[in-house]
Image (cartoon, rainbow, N blue to C red; front, side):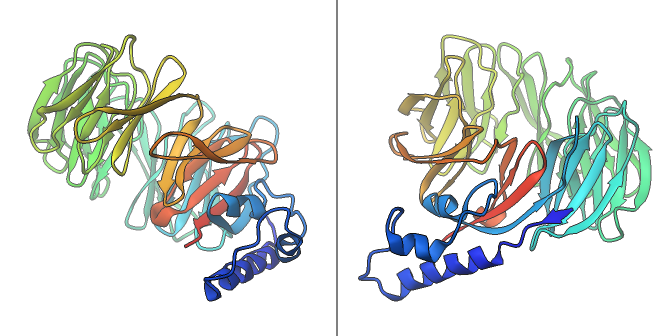
Length: 379
């Protein structure tokens, strides 16, 4: 793994920020100002330049690379405690990077080239990652040592939703089951009428499952008890969003439903003119839905009333005090959450394959060739 020495740049950024905070009456240097260029320094050649990150309200904590070659690519990633864990194809390599400083913790390979690894999860000191038919358990602290490989009760098309030590899956045959990662087999199961195309969604001790036929249910993750159930009127092909506000389901019946978390009753319904096949995203006081028309619509979480609608196919990633952050592939775009209007735009060196938000407002940015940046919000 190659690590970039960016501490001089980070130090200069800190000087800029400290200078701005120590004299509230003084205006911060801006791009084009000679003083700004002097403080920030020369271009670094990173995926995102520190000066550009600062425009969006972020600083670069660290930069590293897993140096992908040929057809290798990162297919999924997750921040799991103190580790950033990536899954790479076609060799099914799992890389664990220390989230604090970007140094490599370990790197290992599991399964065969015919296996498809899904997004990893963590149970205490175990990293778990599943294929369609098996679950692999790795020691997070001992160089990714393989602790076990277990057969799943049913073939699956997605990763699990974790409730404590239970990995809850929705099977391609409609079987929902809670796999106990400590004992290595399913402790409970329930058969839904149709196959399950989208990942299970955890919500505290509960798990929400939506079937391809539109039927859905909220389960207790440890026991499999059904708390409530219902249905929409066509296929659900996009992962629902389950948050503290409610359950948001986009359906191919041209509607998005907002359900009460506790009862499953409809809170409101957003109607459209074509099948909805993109996942809703709930951030603060709004829910955002990409539409088949190449637009994204912002709706009030309280009643589904439309706030605004703009033409863009950029991917919404996060919201912070500066605005809504979108990934446009070769650019990052900041928009006003009240109007959708563009506030800022920065170029990326090359392109971004993955951009995810982590706890604390941090961002992880990965290029197609494996360059990785951790960005943290400037407060």
